[in-house]
Image (cartoon, rainbow, N blue to C red; front, side):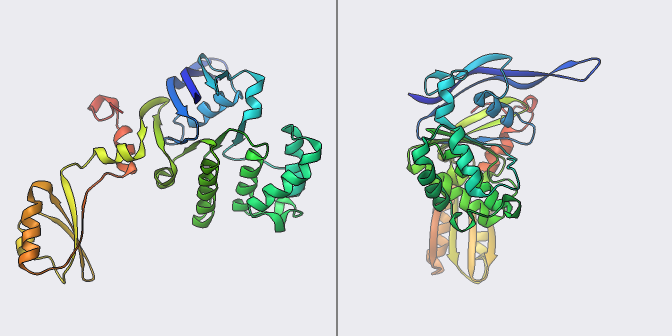
Length: 314
């Protein structure tokens, strides 16, 4: 059974005061996320990512279409017990402590009274907040607040976790901590659906990604597949040499020298000729690998205007 089925979900807002006019925030969206999958929802600011999450949460109502979560309609009250949510900019009351906040959320989430204390203690330890359990939240750093937000999202052990820009505003160490926590959720069999515009995080974490732009789905697929499509027919050769051999340069390679290491990219049909030059000049070969596209290159391609023919496909 699919974890999330989005069936032509659409949202139009009315903007303006005296002369309200419709603004299409999300075009009919059809998407399926499998159970146990880490799914990245990518797009620039204003693309429709947060609108989609709010529709799935039941925080706003769709103009058209529907969705199912674990086989249930999104307006089914039973859905709420199976999902956790961390908004992009969560607000927690500054004068509560971490322990008080999680106890409050445990009560809201229906965690039985006899289990609350143990559940809160365990989740604080899991997210490295034990020593800060009695510290008021106004004294927390951005990274600590984000960890606390993730803790409240999974406190009731949901099957699906929705995260809106979970790495936004974090330093490199904070981003790494959040990535590790998402990886742990996957290992526990949870489905994680998160929006982001930090492509390196999506490339490192996601089983599949979808790209949305101006409310329209532009591409979807497994990260490994999407990044293997572009730049076919080129290979990267890394070897040790003080400079690029002239014979190799005459093949039209793109070379970059770093110390005594050369990184050269050559067309596949010239691969054997390049290797023969290295053998003839007794240059030590380090590696030979196909050149693959990055997720960033695929993302930029999908954001191109439809009219120039570069934005189609998926």
